[in-house]
Image: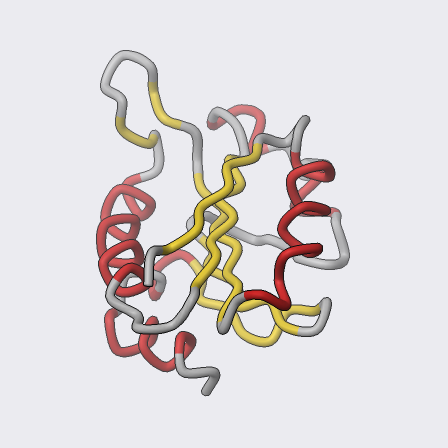
Length: 132
């Protein structure tokens, strides 16, 4: 099945997240991927872990035989993300510590997550995808 993807920035997140939540019941699995913004000069993320994890995550989610939805939430540039008061760091729903963070979202809550150094590990993505 094709993966459904929604993109959000810090400023558009709540509206996009509402749409994501309203459609969640239609999908077998719902994921939120928090990512660093792309550097306009390179079109690559300023975060090396994001550059490494993104293609692996997309490959795994796209290969799923089930309906999968992915909300990509971009955290901003490096100085914005480094602010301890960043919205996604202080939001109790997510309590982000780093990017990339891949979250399995079920029944209105975080059911599993992969952070930073483990978000590119295929076996861990498989476990998250299977709900383990």
